[in-house]
Length: 265
Image (cartoon, rainbow, N blue to C red; front, side):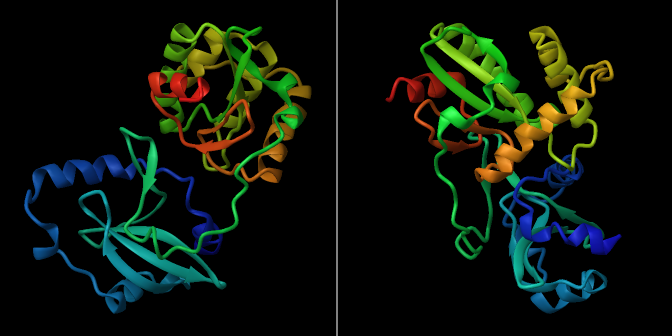
């Protein structure tokens, strides 16, 4: 189990953990002052806690969110981030995302290796025939959003996209359904939405509602084509936007900010 779990450690930039809710409750019940005065974890002690996993702890810092230690770890010459709660009972994979900016935060941001990132794509190569279009299908401005119906940040972002469609009537929002492996139910939901291209069903999927099972084998190939395109073009997490000029923007913004970005402001 641990072997499978930690194959993903070096890539843990796109996971989210429901355990954060419990952590948040713990932090509210606990201290309101500087956590470092009460809670500490040395690199040596952290190594003991995770020794069954076969990973090496390189550094320990307090995470941006209260209640967690952030560990910079290494396995098979690859580095990544994991978290341990202050109680030192639970290990979590994932990333901490600021809910206001929808941008990731890390105590080890400057220490993580920065892989060469693809910063833009040729929009003509995006498989837009596999998109579900929100807003004005004939809009002169086109926004491409790679998104997962079971991603909590995508769900918040989807509400902003609905607002964008109202305040920017000349924008065609191409929803590229990009189900992530850690959300096993998202694949079939994405298939069903793509089969119907029904906006009400799209909204229902992002609201966490019940979505019928897919019925067409062809939708597997279509979703897989989107996933393949993303992987080949440096898109590995959700939400990810591609602007009309092909620039890749990781995360999502509020509707007003996206409108200004599309206007070049």
